[in-house]
Length: 622
Image 1 (cartoon, rainbow, N blue to C red):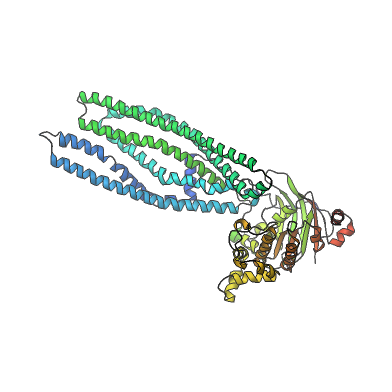
Image 2: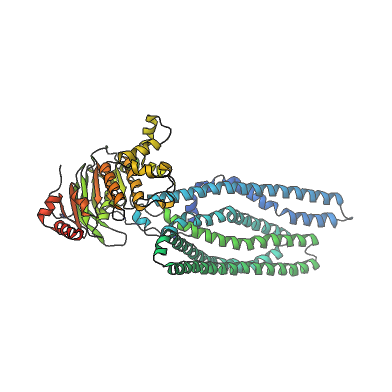
């Protein structure tokens, strides 16, 4: 068995450039239109068939001006025609207007159907891509934001986008078209009254842009507050048992109440700004209508405007002011949507620290699994360096125990060996290949981490163990069995856990509950070991978890571990020195340095750091 000699860590070897230590981006800092363009790039389905939708929207908007035209023509050429009312013309105009309105309504319905179809497809893509990207991020990057706030980016933030895209977007478009068409017809009927209308609205247009910036900032604060509130609530729900155990319910409630109040205050501030902008639009709309009535009456008395044209112009003013008022409200919804979009894009644009080389990656052969660290340095995001130039060889098919005080760097070594993170400097190699060059799918087949607390998903015992069944489905097909239960049961048998499985009321069909809460910590660990066994990895990284279990379960875990590690390369983060005594090789870590490497007898004979730890441990156990 080849292994490094007993020594202190050597000077760091040169390695590849340090990877980016990425924090999760709070939000994109792009402008409104840049955000919309980026959103369309991420979710191209949003623009699927957009030109057909735009044509239908134009027809729908154009159909709305038929009423003013029909009114003007009916009055001037039908009711007030020379020689008396023309009944046939009036009937024809009314019938024609009804047909056009029916067609316009059909176009509007088709626009909505097309929008709902394309936007739901686009937003589903956005959710999937954001969720996938969250999983592509390293655990270190994920940990820079609270879990509830992170979940809100894929859920509630996308919902704000959905509301705008499905309703506000097309209404903004139709309103803009309606304003243009109404302006054109108003110019035809009376250029003087058109100047009056635009003269009243121009100041509102000038102040709208700076007002929208303030609204945008307010909605950005709302999305941040909602994320923080969901984070606080999620944390309290997950930690309910601890909260009750320590009697800190009131303190937790105060924290949640504070988050809720902050969200309420942020929403109120945003809505006050919205109401101010919207009320300004209503005020100006009423002012425009009054001004047109007065000016139109004077023009009518002067003979410059017929009754029909004045009535038609008043209808057109309603068609003009309505969209203007609606546009202010829609623009506010746009700011809310853009704020949510920026947060989602912030996730997607966060750089992936642990990059999968994909098809260009190396596929290493199964078996053996020698792991080597060369000049490895590591620091957490925005933190100090925790590993300092570590050189270490873990021979193939060797049981290695890593010991050291809390915070010495043991768990960091495990993260690097499983490539849950990449070193700041130096290399981690599997069978001589840098892990950064190994295809991740191949790496996950060969290297498996069993955490200190086995995490279970809601479902049955068999379903949870089957998460490790990468090759088990093929095995099931070869055996001709209808499902994976036989393979899962065999995994328990090989680990010597058949008696425990038989004692469960529903066996493999036992419901483990949400996060496995219907099972004890030790039972969850047994399931995690069976899952790892079924994965069939070449190199196992184990975070020892026997300190909080009863003696009977500890015996079962020890027996299962013996079977699981047989013939495999293993790296165990040892919390008990009894694990180190049974290991083939012991690695001692102090303050980010590997200070000793050797067998248990060698290290005791050396009378160094490990011997001192072992003596202290023996004194405590007596």
